[in-house]
Image (tube, rainbow, N blue to C red; front, side, top):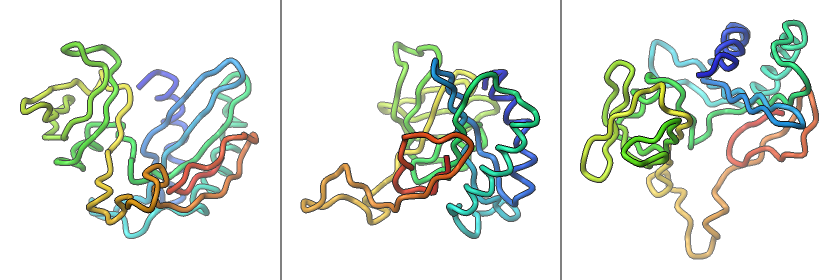
Length: 200
């Protein structure tokens, strides 16, 4: 996580928690026309178990309102930016070793900061987490990656197991899901991502 990611996460984490939610992670995407700050939130799990419900569009809107006000006061981001708040969705992002440990045996798509064995990207099974390293099963062998070298990672949903596999009559690109609404600090022409609540 970069210094800017850490600064924003430390600033906003308590605010998200005060709403009964968990800040999973942040994507900070600087661009010439203005940065994008994307927050992924989830419902806090009770006693280390699974959350009792899923994130709603109302949750995203509440976080967006509170966080926007806090960012206006603290002003950690220079220049224009767009704030986006989203639930993790089925292809949830994985930011920390603890996130990987929660989904052992699942498939993940991983992008690396620095190449390992000639690879910058891989899709592999999460076997285990050893301290600050994640061990993947790849091509019948173990592939060990330092958490600090993981740029981006997401789960790969098993659409068939979820009963959402595309049929011959439905195009594969149209995965099931409802559209979320949008709200937020600065308007954006990007539509809300399908299949997960999302507030801009």
